[in-house]
Length: 98
Length: 473
Image: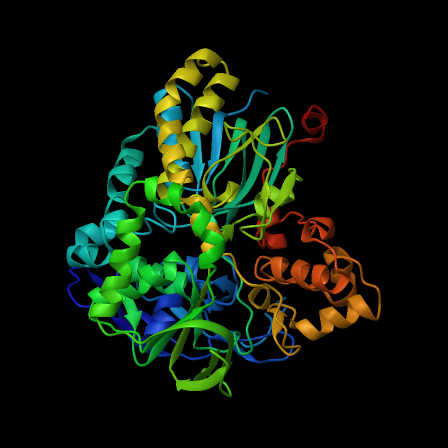
């Protein structure tokens, strides 16, 4: 669904999106990494369980909630990637942890 | 305890950056808090990084975007406390402002004599059947990805809706060699806009830019269907096709990605949460805060600048930011009110030039009823709590649910993670339609803090003043 435009001199780093290792430019957001990987639904809703994906990419819609480095309910479009970051789909609502 | 800053600003777009530069230049101590990792707002999103690492893309995005470099660089050189990646979740204000924010996993409090709200605009929700499917995004989201990430659509994609941003995005993608399969333009209001044309023609560069974009799209041979009256996106778990009605005929186009747009509206939750007085703008079909010529709101400690005060565009927002900074300087005693008045002249004339273009654009792209109050009962309105248009209509007509706040009690409409940002205007338009009342009589959601989600764990990091200190607050 998305492609990286050519002509970039940005340095790259490696993140792990749903278990797959992906190389992305510095300054990328977690939600953009998910979209670059061709992910369709990046979460399922807490109520009906239907699939959703990033919608506004500017922090207002909360559709891009994902699990980042084990922490659920993160707005993926507001998180800048870092080397080795684990970015995962979120299934339903976050779980209560002890 | 006296406030830590003379002026606290939320938002580092054109309005916030210009206000920060101007205020700091007049000797005010300034704090700027912004949600994004770099300054620029959405309009100048990532412009410094893009200029350094993807200069060719600067040409595709165009001179209005590249113009953001100058202001962003000036902002970087100015002595302000800049809190990037900071989400402000509560602001209390009377004689001074207390901002509660979350940044890098911890919560902080900041105090200031004056508080400037400059969070800009967001795209108007465009609820059509299937708009919650993966593969449906906004035009603004794709433009943001172009700027921030150098990411562009792949496969067959279609832009649907109307407004300057839709045409600009299409042209920017064409310049990058990425052609939309079609543009489906919803009905625009040429006749209503015509009497407002002189102001538009007098505004600097607007006509040339508009015609230039249309020419680029025509030269590129992008199929451009005008006068679309109905849209529906279809697919099982992913958008596969778009159905559209145009001139009484319904057609279907296959697609991988649908990009919706129906103009922009003030990003209002912060202003609403402070109970600032608002008014309904029936041409822009949105509420906006009531402001004086300086950007002062109904709260003496609070000013608003830029699109958050009513859509004005980047250059107008920058001018408003400067005007608000002069007001803040006068109100905090750094300059006299006469001095503020004289210094604001330049920004005022810039603002007047850009304001002149708005009545025409607003009238031309005023959204029609079916885009703000979806007629199809099955259309999702509240994406978070999964409340559909038919349910809202049923509750108003059968259960006498009178307004948006009662709608929360009935079905949690507007109470999900986005806190009504993506359903507020739709909900009040549907209720108004059902009750046969103007939207101004229906009102809006009562927005409460925290306006950004925080966890109890976040709250526990708050350095709470001791009881005896707190009594003095």
